[in-house]
Image 1 (cartoon, rainbow, N blue to C red):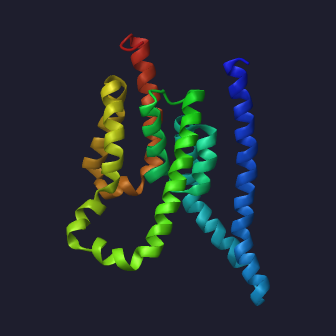
Image 2 (cartoon, rainbow, N blue to C red):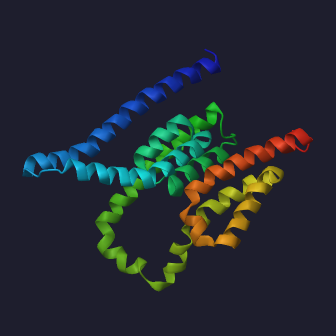
Image 3 (cartoon, rainbow, N blue to C red):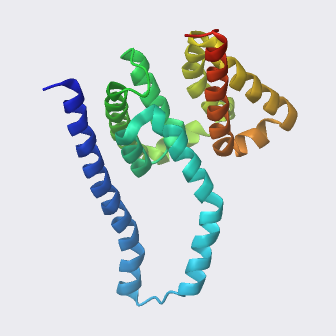
Length: 226
């Protein structure tokens, strides 16, 4: 069987199981409040519920769309399904996928990279669940230790510690292409402040992606890259 045929079958199975899993998760989310309503006879104000949903969609809807478009080229369909079902995409799932692709020396956007990203996100989800379960059992013992002031600087810089090791090799490898979005990010942080940029990173990410593509196309047309 040819490689293209193998990955065509793989993609079909990914979408099949992804859709089924997503529907199961949605039904599970709905079953909890619905079960409480039925068991305790709690009435629901449909109008207030819809207004609350619309307010949440207005805030998180654009962020969800931006994240979906931004992550798709990196982690593929399988990673998208699994990552959005288990959550914590920015902090855990995307870095795990990128690191796995780097270890395997595979470029993002290829069928092989999609398969590796899906496996990495799956393993990350299992490890996270196990750690959370152990933490739940031991929270009473470890909470006082983690709340010591000496650990505060570490917890305040978790995001830079995660993404810097992933970003630097990519920047060094393709410095010409990375220069434009990196300069934009630095300029935006200096002008608007870290807090403002961090709060709107989900909106800024697709802007940086589009800028990277346009800049790469410009460099390609100029003959600066091949």
